[in-house]
Length: 216
Length: 308
Image: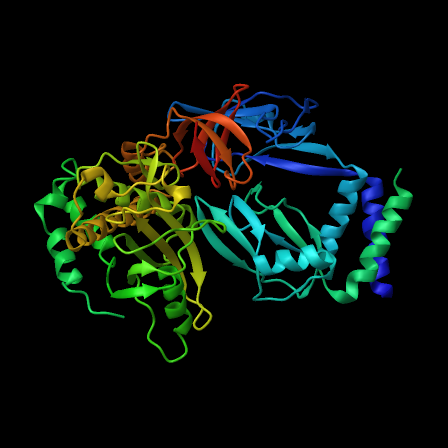
């Protein structure tokens, strides 16, 4: 427990000294880049009921006369921009800029928890919902009473009217955090659930209490 | 299980080799046609015909589960058919009425495709069913993702799921297909929204002839998904390959009347409609491009629509 507390203090002080999340923006494919923002520009993420209003346009990439506008997925400030790439043909995956996103108290708690919990990400961009068994256990007792272990069918992924069972592959534990709304579209790699081994539950409660008390 | 009163396997082989199928794709060169058909050749590799079972998809799941417990693996393309289903069901908990006279089957397809291409299988299954129905002279259309309808009334439906066997852990795509052929009686709740081929044509459809035709089109359209994967992977490192045409989407577009329609969208659109929009198109991965009333665009990769 002592070791966990030391680790916990380090995490807390790190967020206190730098309460930001840095989002690197990379080229989605090879092509000629034209920037639409500059260093210091404020950017917004997508808005609207279904996030249908795109965020601030960040850059345009052109390949074979096919130009694509790439929009910001988060709000913040462009903290770093590789100006030397303006107008250049670059490879896929080249880093173009970094957006400094200011974390809210809730996001800080979530970020800290995501370092402690086992995060189970979405395997593909699709709609997700809990398997019938897990959903009924959540409905009856709440997610934090639901214990899962590797091999359990926990979620169904629905893509193009094809349902695929998703089997849990992480550490055994209780479902501590649910990051998706059943039936909502989730991008590949975005966390679906955070699982907490039983022996870490007390530590996690302490993290939440302390961050809530210290962050104003 | 019952013995079919004709050899489906032989009839399927005959149809695959026939001019009738080849003439459906006149723009495709012979060598490409052969490659596509080879990719899809597993369709119907093993065929079970039942008189009455609860569900064809359930029967396939049982067979897949038994693999690894002494039973032989289920060959990709295994088909289960039944003359009647005791417990047919649609998406969510919707009832599917499956009496004698209809065509009820499920196909197991080994999960060998990469995820970006496996997502095209539901569209390919829809195209195959729609094209098979059209071959009977019925102007059927596809509603995104893969509902087969005639003048707004449902002629057929498809259910897809990925299933991992408990025994050996092999993964398959299971495609359940139901087409109203000679079943002319529908329960009162479905009478206005459903229709059968016999209703439209005025005469019964010869199922012995129709089944191989459907399987032949499944061979083609599933083969097309695999060929598309092969071609995309061959150009994976070609940075200047551009945005190539997806032949699976191209085939689907020719059969669908969804683009241009005003629709209501929802994950479970009957129980919980979310919004109305105009369907513009499907993108290269099969996602439905919807124009909202405020001019914004949304691309949906799951859920369902109703026409307004």
